[in-house]
Image 1 (cartoon, rainbow, N blue to C red):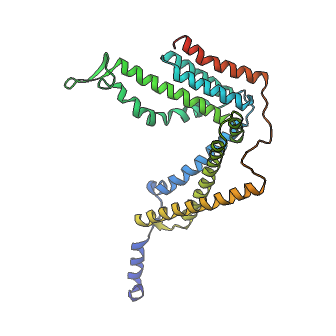
Image 2: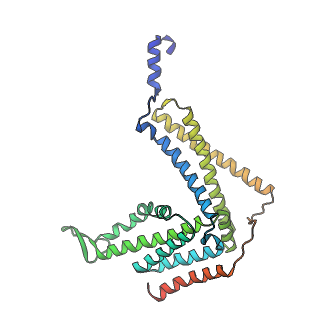
Image 3: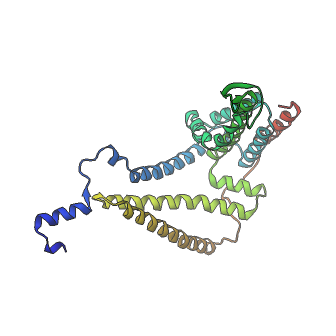
Length: 301
């Protein structure tokens, strides 16, 4: 027991279990804990930034959300039907013009799409480059026996896939960044999207940020109470306990939210405070967007 040890040995034993951090080095300043807190905070900040962009007086923000949803669906359909690289490049130019019209910073917009696109689409696109997946005229020969090469047809297939996904994702991001979330859900309901789907989508969106706030508070509270390095097994135990506590909080909060909604008159249908109205310009946006996939099919683009 610590009471049987001399004073010097007792201090040494205590220091062995909890080592003071001392002057923080680079690794101490950028540990997993700090990175997790910073990632959660940056996610919340980017969401607030997106809400601010939706409130800007841009051209795309003034379009009725129902017209925007129909236009985006039509343009995504056009990207899916496109079979040539110039057509997809033209569609991507359209989405860049739409982002500029919505006053979205182009650097922020392009980075938001292309930063994660290679990690997901690249897993599928990269194998298509090689001759054993896409036979054709070799451009770069990697192995002679067995024969492995990057083919011209493979490059074309990978480029078509990347551009198609980039254009489709970009159209969706423009829609989300230029439309307030509640209004967007109201537009989906007005277009006869099932009520259950809209409500689940809306509650999921709200819950994500409520849980992010709660997680951020938990991490900051723990960090403010740490005075030394903690063993790895203790950190893992705390993470497991935090996950269980967060799950319990979310379940309890769901009951409270539902009871609060019912007590305020909720009967299964979410309604907007400001009714939506289509103007002549909104009809023009929809008709123009609906013509794009028709043109792509007729021109065999």
